[in-house]
Image (tube, rainbow, N blue to C red):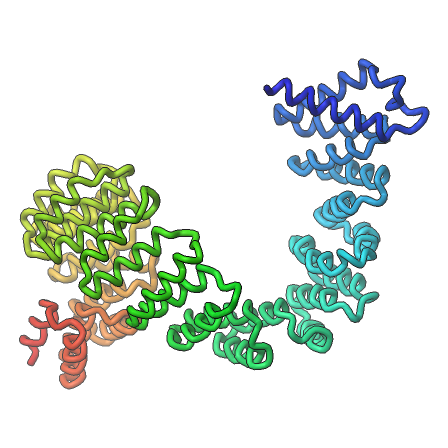
Length: 556
């Protein structure tokens, strides 16, 4: 089959040479059976098939020059694209252009190669020729900046694009090419001038609006939101801008406003399954489960890329409504793909809640895992279910029996260590965490767990500091690690430093145990009312948390 493919290509090339032959060249009919020509074609094609691309491109280029055949020059040019031979690529593309002066593909290839070699002056007339074609002029200008993006001299790029755009003052795309080059070249004056020109020519065009909005968002999301809002008040049918506006609202956690914008998009004729899905997810965030269910069902009708994920969302909503059978029905629809294990784990959670932990464990034991990660997920859930129901010894025995199966898993050793800590098996816990760090040297939570354990037990405080500092260097904004450092300073009696770290951790995540630590520090500083307020507020959200209840009882 390999040889057949080569001979087929050779035959096509020979017929092409004949069809484009010029009188007196070696590609005339008299030379059709020229053994040297056939041999060199065969050699060139075999070289390309074997990956000897420099040789192949050189052979095809020599044949193109010998036969004046544009097809061979094209083949040589395209093969050089996979090599790093810039000189050969440039020569081949020039020959292709000479042999087929009207080919847009040849002109585009030559311009790209010239630009890649920073030969902007040589590229300019080729680009001007390409832009003469009215049908492709607008798209040509839009493509221009992607071709020029890797040129290091951004001022030279702006000069070139400005000169190319000058003959087309009424073409919005030409002005936008200059906008893009001006922004990259940090010429604010030209950037604003060209945006104003576009607004005069084509004020409803969304592309420059999105470009400006994304730049504004980097500086101030609020300014970008105001800009998008103003544009949409004038052009309410601008769906691309509305989608970006909705995403930005979501990023700013303005979920109600974002939901309203997504709903407007859903109601358009060409709304996608993904947009409908976004409304469902925002509705979940707002705890409007009936509305979420409505849009997830709509998304299914619009054939989303990941139906299994939607089935899982619908199962979670049914579970929140205590519709166990409906939840299990949705989960059973999940196929043997990326979400299969996830669906089974959720099923087990539902069984544990509605029936018993033992039933859930029995169900989990029937699951056939295909990878180490999936097996670990199943073991982690089994352990979690047992510990949640205060069956710590059984959970420990399970981890102990599974340990040989996860000898190289840092994640397993971390979970096993936390369980050992609960049972006051501190030597085992420390050994497991050190093993996890050895397997995964950047495992921030393992460093943190070891450091926090020392700090919490008020031992080896200098070692605790070293471990927590390493954890912070890897993950500086992790609220649990910030809390650990604060708790260490509390043990060291440095209350101001302790408050600084734990307040930052609490601002990131109002976790109940962080709240307990914060109240301890405030109480120690004599700020008893503030400490009580923190505890009472946290207890409203986490009334069953044992650490909070114990701290509240002790400090009141």
